[in-house]
Image 1: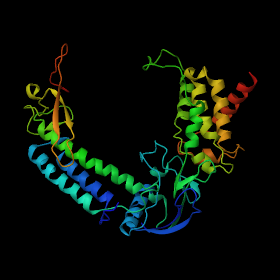
Image 2: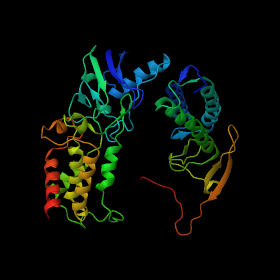
Image 3: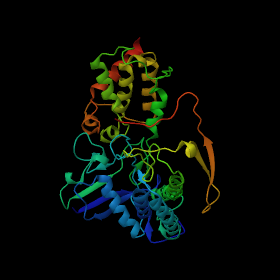
Image 4: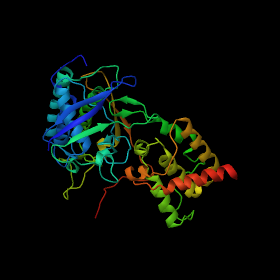
Length: 148
Length: 246
């Protein structure tokens, strides 16, 4: 609240939303994700130096509550982009435009990416650490989904 | 569209409160009432003034958070809509709109248009549930429930617990809310086992919270965003009578 800047919480929320929509949407690609990873930290810095939150800290304050959420969205948004850039395959809701079959279906790369990525927070502005939790299938074998 | 707003402002529970006057300019007729408040609030924040506090969550008429009195009516003009579903085209251009919180002793104002509705939660905690383990969803025809009964229970279950019935009632009665919850469970086989204790406890809690009695004016049904029928109140009364005499 002490920032006392010029831009509202909603303004930052919408600006972040636009970056996520444009570059970290359902279909994403390397160039776009790299662009998002430049834009989000920049916007986050602007947030922490120019956000305007009115009201008091000890009352019910919707603006302050919203600001806390948007602050979290910056971290989560950046992590989403980072993970999407790292995962060089298409899988489920993650469709990388570079990786698809000839018919345009999602193309997985189980050799390299058959794991759950758990990113460990290493402090503000630091790159998180990747922990891989391998997915092993004993009975069912992953295959290509087809809606045909 | 342009509007003049007369909005209840109250810093906290202990503040006396007063009306504040605001202009809402260039509002789309398709904007919801809450979106209109968002626009006004952005203007207030830019001027360094405190925005109008109001409750909202889903903004699609199912969460029950957003009720306010608009021109003296719970959830404003129109039938079967919550405040978030109310469109600005329902008003005349240039109209003055009066916005107030729910007014009822058991719903104290927390700030501006936000009231504390935890009295409803306590009524539910008193008996608005079944304690039997139901496990996963059974086969649809494992427990036969006639269609008319299922429909009736579903109509009651549509209650979103917004509190409009209390705000609309001259007695500040919560009978429609409690009736919807009691009725929904009393109609279905799963609710039968605890029907006696349930109705006794929920009614006792309703009274303890300070809600008024029902005098059958049916304002609650007229203002309910889910159009829940007062016939559920008749079922609540019957359930209560049954619990007391059997």
